[in-house]
Amino acid sequence: MNRSVITFMILALAGLAPSGRADEPLRVGTFDIDASPPVGTPMAYDPTAGVQDPLHCKGVVLIGEGGPVVLVAVDWIGIANDGQTAFKEAIASAVGTTADRVAVHALHQHDAPTCDFTVAELLVAHGIDPSDSYFDPDFAREVIARAAEAAREAKQRARAVSHVGLGEGMVEEVASNRRILGPDGKVRVTRYTACRDPEVRAEPAGTIDPMVKLLAFFDGDEPVAALSYYATHPQSYYRTGLASCDFPGLAREAREDATGVPHVHFDGAGGNIGAGKWNDGSPENRQILADRVAEGMRLAWEAASGRREPISAGDLGWEAVPVVLPPGKHLVEESLEATLADPSADNRIAAARGLAWLRRCLAGDPIPVSCLAIGPARILHLPGELFVEYQLAAQAIRPDLFVCMAAYGDYAPGYIGTASAYYQVGYEASDRASRVAPTVEIVLLDAISQLLGEGQ
Image (cartoon, rainbow, N blue to C red; front, side):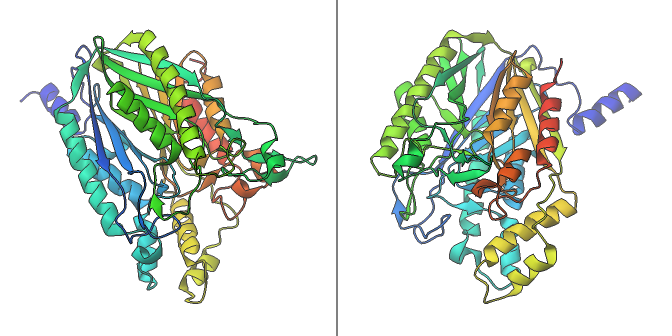
């Protein structure tokens, strides 16, 4: 066997050999499984009493140059640490790719479960059953197994697509900035997603991204799948005990019903964005907000249908940059360990979450920030409850491209503000909510710039 053949075989085993797919069609498969929690298992704040609107785990498998890429969106509040690892490794194994080519995001609904096996292990080690008040690991692993099998089947039935459509639509009277500043430049009041104070609701909408962005895949004139991105907290009201995909999920399902096309939706950088200007928490507002988001999705769909770009396997690109985020100075390992070990402490779960994150940071365990390239589109995948300024900055870096952002990837760091946000304080930048230091802005903007190829 000659040296060139041996070299090719080594590269192929490593997933680095040329695939020969450049001139072949891009193939797309979709999957959708139920991710609703069983009655009696914990959601983010309360035990599950029932299901009002089914929770979904939806995904798309893209088969092109370099091996399959899988994008997953789950109607849970967050998936963190080894929860991310478990999802990615199971799905990667199922579709024959590597875990770094799988992106898993939550939509952050609050009447929904969480998933963090790292924290669960810490709790068990200190005599706390996570399934009593945090999340049910057995249920989470069952969902992961079903998602992996669904992804496998999606790959097997993936369809060739010839075009990708790119469009955006304005969403009216949904997004508003949560952080209302006072004369001193600091947060005067937080306008939460449900705001009952009419004076606070009357404040300007503030810095938002009002557009929903959408990619649609076509086989000739036949639509095959849609991906959409919109930045806002997704709560209309919660603490009902009934699982709900809330207004973004209802909008997504309405559009899927209207078009007959599988629709996977992602929450953008909505950490400091919510519906509070337009929502006083009345239950009827859930459907009103859903209809407004669905209308923006409809406009984006129509725009995408009219702006189609030829696409092939060679037009699919993927790059990931591992970043180590700086931990907040308020995280002190000895203090967190003492709280977790104290049976009388009432914040042991919070201590476990802080400890798990701090240990990752100290160990230099990175979080991947990744970018999917599809023709003129770039889709960024980022961790945490990211502020909308990161999304707007990414769009400004490459105004020549169709830039989308999915946040709420790894949920471990909590809120991720801009550097100035930590001076402004407010809930989102408080020690209670954010586990990163202000220098996080430099780290993430550097990664975003690298992935988008600033100046190219």
